[in-house]
Amino acid sequence: MNTTVLLTFIFYLIGMLAIGIVMYRRTNNLSDYVLGGRKLGPAVAALSAGASDMSGWLLLGLPGAIYLYGLGEAWIAVGLATGAYLNWQFVAKRLRVYTEVSENSITLPDFLEHRFKDNSHLLRVISALVILLFFTFYTSSGMVAGATLFEASFGLDYQAALWIGALVVVSYTFLGGFLAVAWTDFFQGALMLVAIIAVPIVAINNIGGWDKAVEAVGAIDPGHLSMITGVGTMAIISSLAWGLGYFGQPHILVRFMALRSPKDVPKARFIGTTWMILGLYGAIFTGFVGLAFISTQDPAYLGDYGIKVISENGVQMLDNHEVIFIAFSQLLFNPVISGILLAAILSAIMSTIDSQLLVSSSAVAEDFYKAILRKKASEKELVWVGRIATVVIALVATIIAINPEASVLDLVGYAWAGFGAAFGPTIILALFWKGITRWGALVGIVLGAATVVIWGNMKGGIFDLYEIVPGFVLNLLAAVIISLLSKPSPEMEKEFDEVQAQLK
Image (cartoon, rainbow, N blue to C red; front, side, top):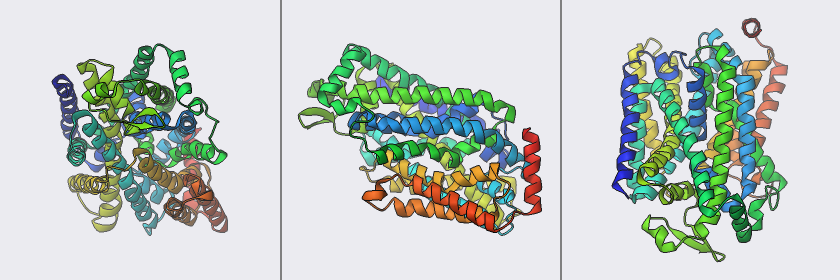
């Protein structure tokens, strides 16, 4: 690995840690640590939401899937872009208003307890448990992606790379909390966008133009050129269903809650949607062009950069399809730019891990420690509980990621389905339907999460359908049916009307 690349990479990491140290001085209480005091502007909220959402999946998982299977995998991008826009359009403003009206809720379990006036704390505890369960797997996917980056770029052993990546991201999250996470995600999101647009453009020019790229891919496998050929109806539905996940992702919803004003939502929606569409296009083109590019390169030349290839049906392919973006960054750019592009990959990874760790640690501090164990805990004590929880959760996620064969896309898919099915219908109903009750919400969350766990471990036939679909549908049905058999309290109805009045 070129020394210039390494130095550029290290300089970037120091910058992220510096932000953590600066924000440490601005974190005085638990609200600052988990929500930044509701002071995010639209640009920071939008880019930090996008960066924490897309993660290493945008630069590793999606390009790798397109590289290996072709444009049939692009249905996921269609589903995600649609879901993200609808989330900003219909959920963002209402959630921002409702969480402030409902006793200034600062976490998702906190909001659910206050929204449904649940004095038993059941909703809070079960929601927090669901967050800890699925975020452990989600964080683990980021650890795998980080280790893949360090291993492929610097020739490190996978295990060593895993622990180095975990140490970096835990450090600034531990120090600066939400403000550090939001501002690092803002810069990381900008860097990710530049990288994911630049790489495919340079790669296409290197091949000789878009027509040459299409011709080369078609010669290798005509099926790669079509979004329909060889893609079954169930696969398309499963891919589009990724969009349902947005309505229940705690690390994205918390950005809506942290906006400085509901009036910032339209501008944030425009910035966030534009960022996402451009990023998804770049990821698709990176994977698509990568197949044509790698198949024509001298194996010895690739080996000089530590890029491993194998032969499949007479075609030279990457040994690990999820490193195609890394391969391009090393092969097509000078050392300084290459270091920046590798930093962009780490940005994508870190921007999601930090958000997940923060939401998980806030669940421990606010929804377990404060609500159940020590109701009179001081703000300083709660911040330190959150910081310690950050380290412990990261440790567990890193241990899960020790398996080097784990797929970034598979781990993300499982956790994404868990949150979408458990919280998505509940959040939508809580914001738009006065009639939903505490028991409807509670049974829906449990049923949605349980369906994902059970369905995700079954194989074949109908179980090939992405588990978010049955989980989301069963949650929605259960919540509506049980709510119709019970009745919301007058206090809940009055608060709902107050929110409606503010929105108008």
